[in-house]
Length: 87
Image (tube, rainbow, N blue to C red; front, side, top):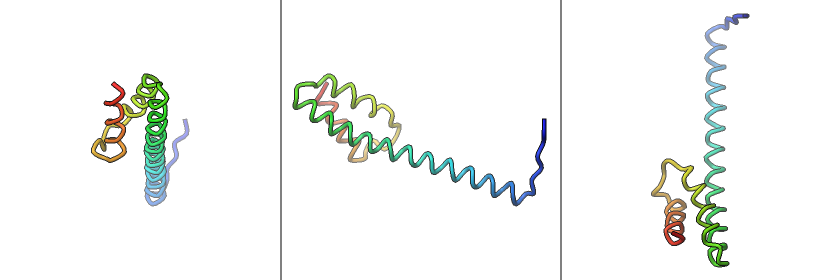
């Protein structure tokens, strides 16, 4: 096993870089989920109009359940309203 000893300034810089990179990845993932929600909501509306309500509900419910906060945001309120109409 090899142990690396870094000067404190380098170690702090590396930690800030790693933490910033992780935060950026989390932000991108959250933005992607928001875009997926918009897309799935639009498709669910289309499928509902075409008579595929069960498929629309199942697909939209899957992405909706992945959210753990922000339920008062307009996009999540819209998705919940559509899910309620598909139940």
